[in-house]
Length: 227
Length: 227
Ligand SMILES: [Zn+2]
Ligand SMILES: [Zn+2]
Ligand SMILES: [Zn+2]
Ligand SMILES: [Zn+2]
Image (cartoon, rainbow over all chains, first blue to last red; front, side):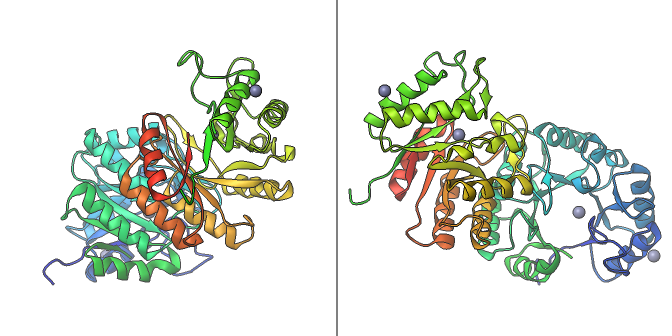
């Protein structure tokens, strides 16, 4: 293939627990070994969440620091992307790991519903997270939970809040947000090309049972994959 | 014209104040006379917000009752649509006017950003507002601030939460939500046809300076208009 897909591995996510699946890596050493295995298998990007001692999602910068060090030691050259997603906090603590200067961090640029609640990303929080990412030279991955989020990334790019061409991830199949629908996926790809040019990279993630399907669409359309 | 557009007039909205524009009708009698004038000019639906004595948006059922009575008296046959939108409240009070059994009420089915804050419509609130609308036989107008909201209306319809074919309004041009973009408008229309059939009605509203443009698109594409 002339243009191989970049595979991004999300080792743990923020939702599953050991009770759901005993194989889910939750401790730092489990996460590092699991990332190492994915790296050996060809994953280029590690998308990282961390858990506290009870296994609950947290934004604790100290834990992120140890995970980042572990991945750097075991997976030289792997791109490390830390999550600023809202399952692990609601306010400024969501950006507390950005001073670690990871290669990338996820950035939500709009609000939407999640299965049981509102996923709140106020205009002020978004602006601040983007500011912190510029300050610490962290490349954002824009999490597009809906169509307007791609347009908002364009607006932020035009205003200089996202300096480089935004790298957008389509998140599909989250209950109460955008379902995994092929015609929407196609329109998302067209939208990225329309706003950021024909060669702008993007990636796609199908949540839960939609993962394989969305990965197939992304591979066929020339995008990158989140596994 | 074989299929004339229905014109929906939003007399006051919830944002402008007398300070912005002294011609904005804010008192009940101003609103009723302004609706009457629009009715004489051909408007078929009155989309209604109410204000408190300071001119601030409110969900006060008593005020809605007086506005509804006034419009019924001055504009016989006009369809009355009361707003359950979140600029006038944040919780269950947003549905406090539904026992008045207006012909229609607006229903947001997702969350998104507004110019300075999150427009919060939790899954629980949405479900409750739809339940109240069924209880009091009020037809919802689905306010689509983003693409996933149209898909969510379909899901609610499939679950019986919206009994009739959803009547969707595309809201475009709200800062930090969906901009007024023609290719998105076209995709919205296609989405309604895809989900609800080729004859499903829909309407569109462009906010502020986008009003004339979005109305033109809607008229050309066979939709109804919010003025
Ligand atoms: Zn994540
Ligand atoms: Zn290792
Ligand atoms: Zn309104
Ligand atoms: Zn009158």
